[in-house]
Length: 114
Length: 112
Image (spheres, rainbow over the protein chains, first blue to last red):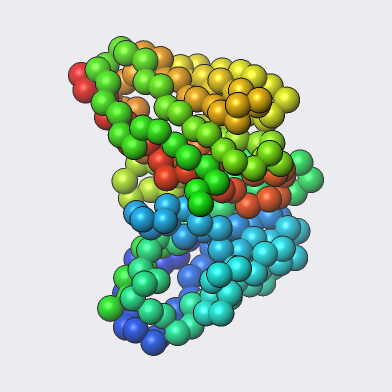
């Protein structure tokens, strides 16, 4: 089975641009999580979906970050407008529903905002 | 305030030694504790996990010891190998389909 797929692997954006990151979860997994990783803050949860329903919409990140799960096999994270402080690695993880404790991560998208 | 704390920040051991990584947490509602291993340029990979009903979980050379009363756990890597050189993250959650809260990681270097 294929693991979690994320595209693109690298993205460079100018300040103020809109960027969309994509994630395909493990086949059969219906729970999906978006995290951000920086050296200072470490790994932080951005949003997550349980059986495709949005459970957390980003908290401190909600004003410019919007995650959507378009179907059970595809999710996007939109950042609009981007700021230099958004430079980070964005990670997607998935787990199976009903009893799926284990989360499996993708390789991440490294975003650089100039 | 960091909900999950890890120590040390970095650790160096010789091949064959046991590496001990420590983790503590604040929230008593946490009941699931996975450890992830991350190599540069890759996403975190699930290594081993434990639920709060257990006090020990073993998988090959990796063992988690869990002390619920003190809200502490540790990861022991026995017979360390150079290929174990990576950053290890302790995480916690309240249960399935819940987001994970991560520590800041311990960078382990194993020298031959």
